[in-house]
Image (tube, rainbow, N blue to C red; front, side, top):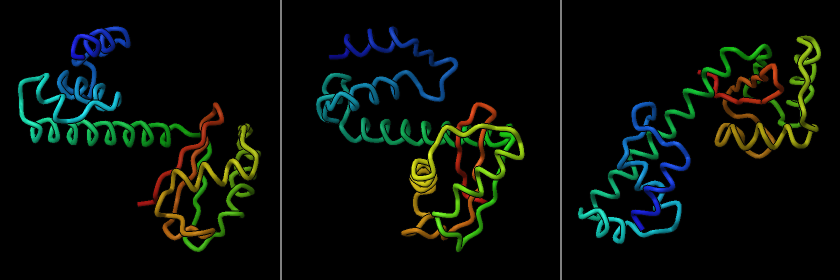
Length: 152
């Protein structure tokens, strides 16, 4: 089990020097993604299940922070940024984005229903039903990728 994970980490090019994860965190995440229990991982690594739980929790938090950092960096360089105020109907968001993209000469490869789903999924609790309940910034990169951030 551990040997398979060592091979996997090597195969995908995991490098703890350039990663936000430690080697142990990468091991634990790789095993958990393969549905190995925390108790079995603890036995294989010679540690407690509580320690494995702590390692997994820290790893997932680090991954979440890394994703947020990438989203922030992409939003900074996105040529299109659309402010979506609270109270906006989700059905109105695609037109706001399309208009801003047309103005900036950026192409979005999403139909209106797809774009609503992307925004809704990324916004999470900031969208309630069809209504934006927390102000959002919808960024579109020059490659047409849509990024959604809560306005803070």
